[in-house]
Image 1 (tube, rainbow, N blue to C red):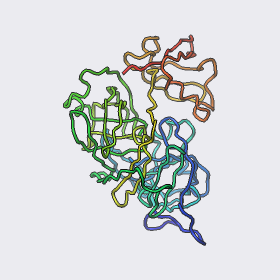
Image 2 (tube, one colour):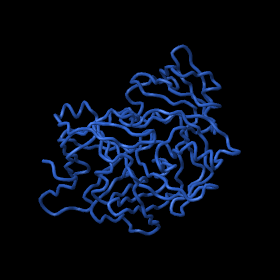
Image 3 (cartoon, rainbow, N blue to C red):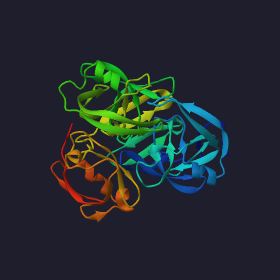
Image 4 (cartoon, rainbow, N blue to C red):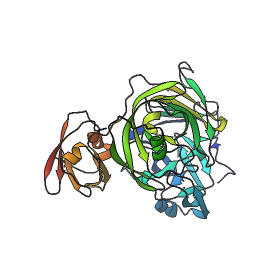
Length: 371
C-alpha cells in the first residue's frame, strides 16, 4: 500500500477540482477536521511545524503499524527523539494519501482540544499539493496547481525558505527589531512565540504591560513572559496588537514563531513544494485573547489549573495553581467543554464576570486584558 513518498492516490474516473475539499473547525487554537487512518474515522489536526505527520501511539499499536526506527527533530526546546512507524493510508476530504512513515508520540498538541485527536498532519502531507486555508468559511481545499475561488485578487505573494530542520521560514518586520526570520507554524495555538533573548536585546517589552504564561510543545513545557507587540508585518501586511510569549530557553535559529492566531488573520495559500505562500487579509479579523489569566488542562469532568498569570483577574481572585474547576457559570465541566464551545469563556468579552466553581468555593472572575 505504501508508496516511495507521500502522494495523492488518484481514484478511477475524472478528478474533480479541488481534489481535497473538507470543512474544519478552529478549537482552542487548533485546526481540527475529520479524517480516516487505514479506514478508521479519526479526528485530525494540522501542524506545519512538524516535518512528518504524527499519530497517537495507542492508535499506531491498534493498527499494527511497524516501527522503522527513531528520528530526532528540532523544537524550540531543543532536539526531540520519537519513534517512526508505518505505513498507513490517510484520507482527507475524499482523497487518500499513502504515508510510508509517521511519528508515533503522545504529544501535548493531541490533547489541547480535548476531543481525542489521533493524528497531526505535518509537512510531509502539506508538501504534496497547494493548500488553501479559508478561515472565513472554515474550509480546506487543495490540489496540484490549486487556485483560490475568486482568483488571486488581493493576495500578496511571499517567498519562503526552509531552515536546517526543514521548517518553513518567512520574513517579518517588527518595530525596533526590523526584518527578522520567523517560522510559519499552523500547529501552534500561541499567536507569536519568541526567543526571550531576542525580546530583551531589542527591548520589545519596554514601556509595555508584562505578565506570565506557560507553553507546552513537543519538546517540553516553559514558563513565558507575556506581552502585546504593537505591530508586526508579513509581506508588508500589518497585524496589530499581537499577543506574544517570550521563552527563556530557545534553540531554534529563527527568533520568532508565527502561530495560528496570526496566520488566521489572513486567507492563506501554501505551496510548500515551490517555497511560496499567498496571504489575503480578512477584514475585521481579531485575535482570541485570553482574559482570565488561567491556563487549564481538561480532565474530562473538571479543569486543572496549571498556571496563573501575574497581574491577572485569576491571581487577584486568589485562584491557585493546582486548583480544580468543576463548573463555569453553574454548568458542570463535561464532554461538551470543547465541542460545545464552553472553552471560550476565558476569551471575553472584556468586563464579563464569570462564576468559576472551584472544589471548595465559587469565585467571580471579571475578564479583562492584563497585558
